[in-house]
Image (cartoon, rainbow, N blue to C red; front, side, top):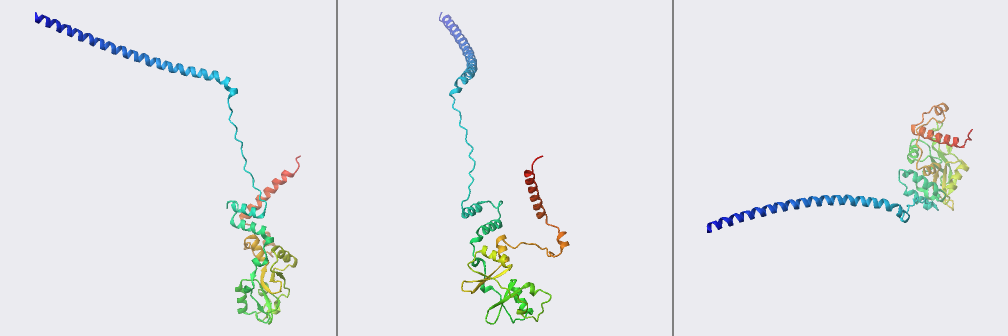
Amino acid sequence: MNEAKRVVRKSQTKTQGQFWQKVKLTWRKIVAAIKKIAKKLCAGLRKLKLKFLKWLAKWLMPKLEPYRVKPKKMAQVEPKLHIPESTAEFLELMKALPKGVLSDRERKVIATAMNFPEIQVADVMVSKNLITYVNKEEVLGPLTLDRLYRSGFAHFPVIDDHKQILGLLHTEALNSLEMRETKRAEEIMDMRVCYVRDDYNLMQVLAAFYRTNCYFFLVIDPFERIVGLITYQMLVDLLLGGAPQDDFERDMDRTAVAKRKMPNTVITRANSKSGVSSAIDKQKSPSC
C-alpha cells in the first residue's frame, strides 16, 4: 500500500514539474513577443513624432515670420585714412611704412627734401680744419699735386703769406694739358671766390649756386672768418642720398650720346612712364 502511494506521489511530482516547465517556456515566449511588439511600437512612435514635428514647423513658420527678429547687418567699416597735418606727422607716417613700399634711401631723400629749408650750412659744411690750402708761390710739382689729390677735394683756396684768400684752384686746371710742373698756383688760379654765411639755410645756398653759377663756396661767420666750405656736389648728394652713378664719359661726343645703349631698368622705367602718359592722353582725348 505504501509503495503504491509512493509511486502515485512520484508521478504527480513529475507531472507538476513538466507543467511548470511548460509554463516557464510559454511565459518566455510571451515576454519576447511583448518586447518585439513594444520595439515596433517605439519605432512607429518616433517616426510619427518626426512627421508631426515637421508638419508643425511647416505650419508655424509662416505664422511666426512677422515676429521673427531679423539679424542686424554688420556695417562694413572702411579704414579711416589718416591725413598728416604737419611735417613731423608725415615723417612719422613714412617711418611706419614697410620697406617694400619705401627703401631706407628713399625715406632719407624724402625726409631731407622736406627739411631742406630748415637745414643750415653749419650742419652740413666741411669744417675749416679739413680745408686744403695752397700758397700762391707754391710750385705745382708732383709732391704738391699728390697732396691735393689725396685730399679728395676738387677746389683749393689759394692764399698769400698773410693767409688772405686770393683765388681758387680747380682740379680741371690741374689736369689741363697746358699746366706744367713749373707753374705756380697764382698763375692758374681762378680769382673768382664766392662766400656764404654759416647760418644760411640750404635753400639760400642753392639760390646762391644758381645765381653765381659757382660750384664751390667758402663759408664764413658774421665776423668774416672762414669756418668751412660747401660744394654743389654736397647738396646733390644730400638731396639724392648719394652721388648719381654713371660710367659714361663721352658726354661731349654727339654720336656717342645718340647711340648709347641704356640699361634695361632705365628702358623699362621709360616705357612704363610713356605707357602711363599715353593712357592719360587717351582719357583726356575727346571721343569721336
